Length: 250
Image 1: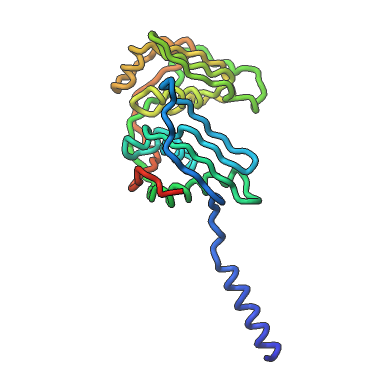
Image 2: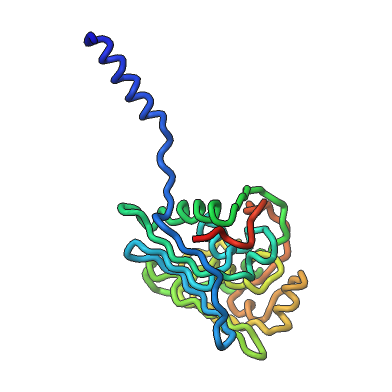
């Protein structure tokens, strides 16, 4: 074999290797099982990843889709059960991988174990726009480092109200919290920057109004110079085309 032939073969091998698509990231091993009911009837959701392991407890497929495809909960459209049926997931990350690659690995696991297929689609959707009320006093940011923003948020309910506490949070964080109780997604359109100290109590009457599609200036938001307006806006949605209720065996 002459030198010219050897060079051609080496070049062909190099081109073949260069044309190969990068290997898809997948969990080294993953266990997915239905969650056991808790004795007190309360659901405690836990989602963590550390030391090369992912541990999700009492999560729904909607929770997993939110992480896997980097979307908000209200962006997901699919069968009702994906937000009801709960699973425990324990997965081992391959050596050398990072937490930033978990969404890709989670996508692969959902495709393999639940036969999931999805697509993205932009739709004209009813929303609540969180805006600054006309004539309202300017919002004053909380004097905290930017790295501390969006921490310590909590949601509590009692017989009279839903209590949303979001110290050092952005208006976008507040909008996401309110979205949990509204019929339509709440989108931050305030234009406000920085962290703020929000402590909002929504009466159940207000929550029922939001869930029925009504829109008004709520007393609980007025004191922050904010209001909700019912609007239409094009939003990207994640559409679940197919998903199996029972995952394939571990």
